[in-house]
Image 1 (cartoon, rainbow, N blue to C red):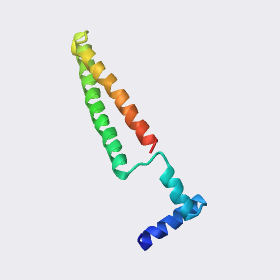
Image 2 (cartoon, rainbow, N blue to C red):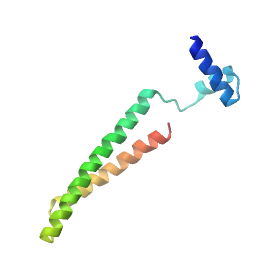
Image 3 (cartoon, rainbow, N blue to C red):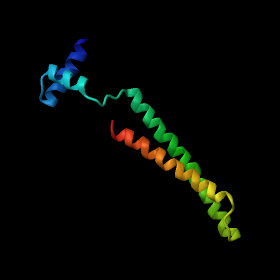
Image 4 (tube, rainbow, N blue to C red):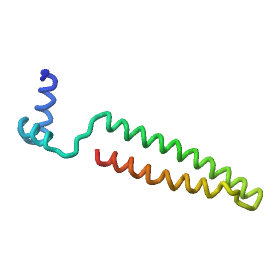
Length: 101
């Protein structure tokens, strides 16, 4: 271990009010281990879903404009609603993963 890593471990142990060996044992025994890569993947998923939801919102605006002009909804309206409904659980799952990190 480098001197910098040793200093970081000691500082974390002080904050946690445990010894360095206790901190290492508890960290190693923790069932929830997350890497920076895991966190970045979840954040990327949240942004991907956000982008898709923005596209769906744009489609809904176009439908609303059409409905106001024509006084009827086009057949595509149901497909757009289904698209939105598919995105909500995907976003919820990503946010749950982010919350658990």
